Length: 395
Image (cartoon, rainbow, N blue to C red; front, side, top):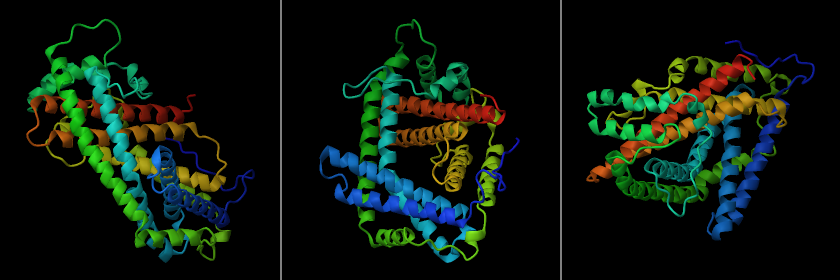
């Protein structure tokens, strides 16, 4: 794949040195301090609906600034004081991960409940009408991505999952083409019966996890460890610990290295498998009783992190005035959906391992797990299509 690196001799942009990095870090540190003040003024979301919304906005701004500071410290580490940078990066990663958990659990619950409503054909009165996500367009041109599920049911039975074959047939009917449909069969009835209990189980588990994450975030924001991080960021807003040679060193080579790491990781992805509408190996791993993370997901999560680092490096070079890169935008959206769907599938599988649940509940959770794993495949397919199309120069 031909690469287009940033040209350090571009006469239009001119040389970009450590001074630009210092300005970028100061801006992100100032953004962090503003968000922290807003979060404290709203009382962490304890002052009603408006306070909760403002607190959520402040938490997002905190995570946004922390991620960009951490990514810049990683990409441009040779230009910063090594001892200070190595001490800050783990603390920033801890803070970003802690603040992100509450939002992640809430979004995961919403995603799973909407999927249950869509698969079972029922909609709760409190829920808005379910709309087809944009990612489904990537698979609508290839209905075999879902329709092939029914023909593969026998293979699923051979790996010891007879019940799952029925679930997958129900999933194939839900995601098939529009038009007249036959009367509901026993599979759909079982799914409808179990969907309510499965939704209640997921809501109970993920709401509890979200509540705990909220409490952990509040405790974090009041801890001495957080205050130490905040003090360092406050100092960063006024003085950036650059090396003596940073002001005369160009940043393009470091940004190009980040881009190289991204393209190498993408080249190692099984894009041919992602281009196939049915990934049998992924289904076999998904049906495994092993609670370990899905083995195919880790490289894609790594590409998502490297894509984020590449975007942040470009922000530093462009001074925050960079034009929208459609390729990076669409690729990032596909990888975000991939992450969300894989974590939602893991949550459904974990709920299905709950002891003494009813067979109908386990059946609905199995259908839900299969649905989310197919969303993972759809996200990979969308990423492969958008990335390779842009690489070849296709509009």
